[in-house]
Image 1 (cartoon, helix red, strand yellow):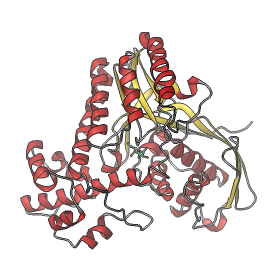
Image 2 (image 1 turned 45 degrees about the vertical axis):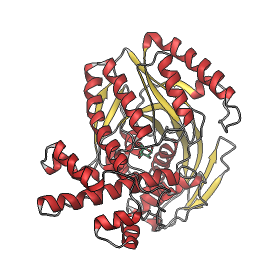
Image 3 (image 1 turned 60 degrees about the horizontal axis):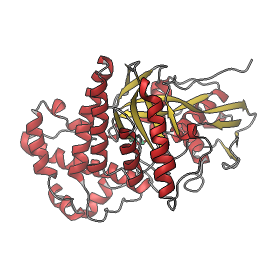
Length: 439
Ligand code: GLA
């Protein structure tokens, strides 16, 4: 079986807020060759020697390896599939797998979710069980939180539902996926900043704190909406409180939001005061992560207003991008990508100096638009480039970033690479995950 990685064209950190995303699957993937086992044993051999062999038993619950271990992504899938009841833990069969992969790791191209998806397909196949891709994507989005980050559902959904040659506009709660055409006269090019951004390790706090800030935004906004309209609106995430859902003019909602969460970063005490709750209750009810730990207040407080502003503006850009793609409006596509990047940098604060350098060099090298892609804090950018300017773009970024910036800033921990085409490549929109039967 095979499961692809993805590049997100636009819609960053919108998924866990219930707003849409617009990614496409890429032709870089995880491939598993499996043999069903006679016992519950799951034995994993990765062709990359830096990922040591792993074996464990398909018993429920599956206890994790230590944090950051690659085998946890396979365990996440097995635990999730058993937990959902698709396979009876009493009769589960394991498998032996030889695993190969071509998705750069910790680079914002979703190698982790591709590994989770391929692992789930392997486990299901070993147990002769089929699950529709939509429900499987929803299940695996929850299951991946096993590794400790509170991710949304974009990566698993696009890996399972993608179509060749198209991007996918994905909505959540409930999950729906609508193919979006890709204009033939541009290409989307991925460039790796060579800064690792592992979501289950160093980037975990930064990612999870954005999720919690959005949760606080939801609670604060829900409270003011209740005060203003005189009834309680059940709100699990920001999209439940959209102007459309509430039947309000966006300007009115915006002024209520300003009143509820506007201004300076909010300290825990202040959030508690505004919610009429004890600080301890805010921590346990709103700042708790899946593993039961409480996310510590960031130094300087929670930047709730900026996060809210990013999520709403980004959701609007996703809709505009769907139109720009189907109209083949190249200037529109580029400008939306640039606006998205600015909002990710200034309001969501998920950029870093290397991504900034790479985006500027991409634009100087002729890109119509360029932005960070994925969770941020390192990893890759995606740039829209006219086909006829592709060579000029590639040589501009090679000279400016890989030969220039990376050499000049040589003391930083850049990831080493062998071929330039491993770290900078135009994407071909590939199809979603699936099986091949050996003849
Ligand atoms: C990671 C998560 C996704 C999404 C992106 C940011 O890739 O796994 O669910 O939140 O970050 O857009």
